[in-house]
Image (tube, rainbow, N blue to C red; front, side, top):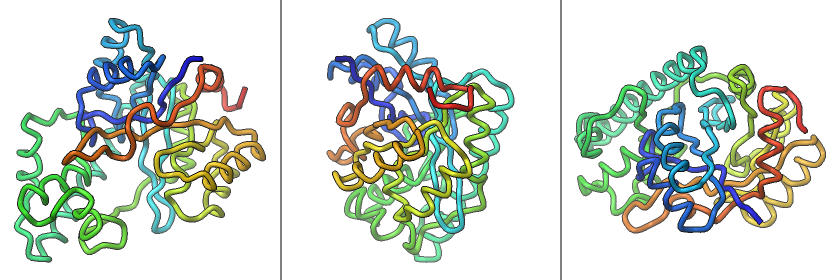
Length: 285
């Protein structure tokens, strides 16, 4: 059997590793391939593909687009999209600008709590220059809070300040999941609703599926339990969606793997071929 982890992040967004490091790790774990799905950017894919060519690991070009419905952040994954599509790249720039504004709001919230943190502190913690096509996220802010001593560890930073509903959290208006699905299709890709179990609202999940008609749904995810998997597999079957799997690997922070180790959630090559065929067609094969 051949296996692919279809949800991994690199330092092009909020992962810890270079794209080539993710590919090397996939090779070491015996995977046939992996997808690079950074938040609102495709900046890490070229490097990953070069490494994949050298190591014999297929790199599925992907992205994870940030959207919002009411008070919930919803993520949509895109696979096999054209990463040179000019309209897509311009749209991703606009999404990263929204992300930057959100980061500024989070910093303001933390300052009001008496925490003397700046965006410059966060960027300094990267240890390198941030490229224009890369993005900062809450994990970077969490790392900075830990370095400052304002949080005991990465998880504590989220639990106390950065998770939804906590005093440092902020969210700005974003595009809808349906728009993200359309953007991915227009760029020749196959859209998949990411980690539905994290939203805590299956009625909303079904509404997105019915309105947006994605090609697939991420049934198997590091934060899904067996009951979640069974429930979303049933939704996939009911709506003729491709059931996908991904670890949502972000690397290791403070000795802890976040969300799950690369390769711990995977699909066979049959699923990858279904996504490849569904890409850009508006239908499920």
